[in-house]
Length: 82
View 1 (cartoon, rainbow, N blue to C red):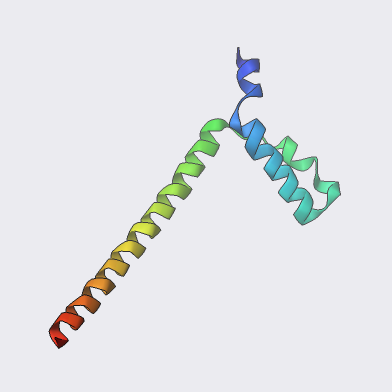
View 2 (cartoon, rainbow, N blue to C red):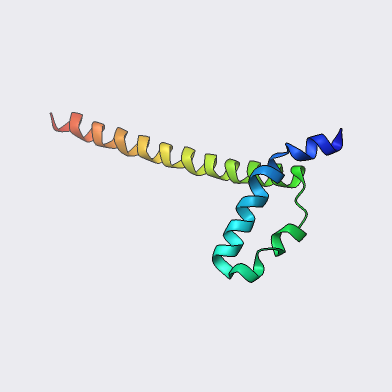
């Protein structure tokens, strides 16, 4: 059962091939086999993706709040001029 899961696990099908491609692109063909020696566990990858998405969400919410505040200030100035 574990062997079947390992074939369809996102780490093996998405992360590792991308890591190999980027490593080869940045460091050259002599480094192509290096990423295959690094073990990536689903939990580690999952937690890292969650951390990145949480940070992105915080940045987006902050940007939206500041944009909304700026828009409200501009509308308030416009209304006060009339």
